[in-house]
Length: 333
Length: 70
Image (cartoon, rainbow over all chains, first blue to last red):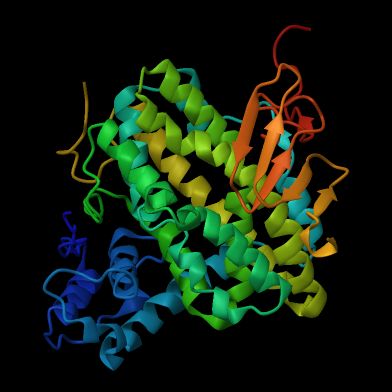
C-alpha cells in the first residue's frame, strides 16, 4: 500500500509591493510593513497577499515555517489587508436585513440569465471550460474547508445541520467521494494538473477575492453570519448551474470523471439548499435575529464577487483571449 | 420502535426530505439507492433526475420583455 503525502504548494510570484512584502515575511524575512491602504481593494496585489496569508491556515506552503500562521507581524499585515477588502465590500454592497427576501430571490430561476455556465453549455470552447475549472480549483481543491471554520462558532441545531452538509461534502467517510477529490478527478480527466495550488499564479484577482471572502468570514467569529450567507448563496444557486455544466461537458465530449463532479452537485446541493435554509439559517436567526444584516451582507458580497469574476472571464473570452494571468498556460486548442 | 422511525419532512414548496439512507423502488421495478444523510425526493414531477430533486420545482421568471418582433 502506498501512502501519498499531499505536498504543500510552492509560493506564488508577487504581483506588487504588498504581496512582495507578504511573501518575504512568509520566507522569514522582516520586511517593512507594506502600505495596504495604497493597494486597490480588489486588485491583484492585495488579493494575492491576502490569499497567501490565509493559505497558512489551510495547507501552508513548501519551505514556509508552520509557525508563520500565528506570526504577529504577518497577522498585523493581514488585518490591514482585511480592513481594506472588507471596507470596500461594505461600501459596494447595499446593506439590508431582509434575510428571507434575499434567500427567496436566490431561489428564482431567471430563464433569460446568461452567465458563464450558460455560455459553456450553449457554445463555450473546451479551453474556456478548462480555464474555468482551473480557476475554480482554488476553492474546490479545499471545498468546504473555509466553511468548516465556522462550525465551532455555531451551536445547537444550526451546528448539527451544518455538519450534516459538511459530512456530505467530505464524502460521508469515503475519501474517494469527497468533493475535493471529485474535483481533482475532473481536473485530471480534463488534462489539468490536480496539484493543490497549481493554478494560483494563473488565477485573476477576481477568483482570489471569492476564496478570500470565504476565508475572511470563516476565520472571524464576528463574521459568522456572513459566512453562512456566503455558503447559502453557493448551495442555493449551485444545482441549476451545475446542471448546465454537466450539459456543457457532455456537449464538449468530456469523460465520465469530468462529468461526475457537477452531476453530484446537482443532487447534493438540492438537499443542501433545504438543510441550509431550514436547519442552519432558520434556527440561527431565531436565536440571534441581529445576525440578519451580516447574513444579507454575506449573500450580496458573494453575488457581487461572483459577478466580478464572470465579467472578467467574458471580457477575456469575448476578445478570444485567455483568462489566465500569464497567458502562457492558456490551453488553447 | 419509535426511535427507529425515519424523519420525513414534506417541504410543501418542493421535495420531500427523508432522513437516513434510502432504497427507492420505481414503478418499473428499478431500485435507486441514496446513502446521503438526507435525501430530497421529487414531488413536482419536473425533475430530470427522478426520484431525486434537482430544484426544477423552482419558480422561473423572464426578466426581459420581448426584445424584437412586435
